[in-house]
Length: 134
Image 1 (cartoon, rainbow, N blue to C red):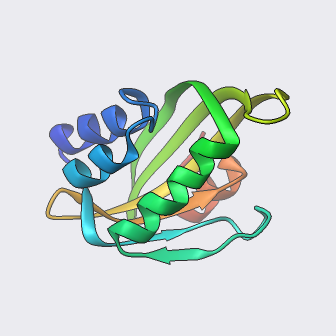
Image 2 (cartoon, rainbow, N blue to C red):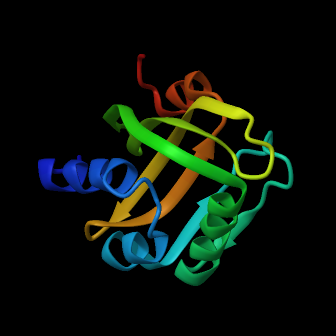
């Protein structure tokens, strides 16, 4: 079970900087051996291992998407980690096409640091996997 301090740190990770300074977020809150798994529904989805690889992947997101605002919709202890549902609003950097989407992440911590970050395009799918109600 996550402590209030850990939940607050996760909330700040998603909301506070809106991942504008992902390297700083990673240094403060990610385990050096973090594993990030993208939802297979995401074009070009992959698995990224190690802090540097995950930072590089999130930097690619920042190049493609101008995030205007990110907010945590749900942050809940799950049977095997923490479920975070995050609403992201912004636009495509090149296209300007508006983006308004709720992503979900199943997160596993190791000594207070994010050790696994599993992304889901569909929050309901993540809730089902985590055994959490909406």
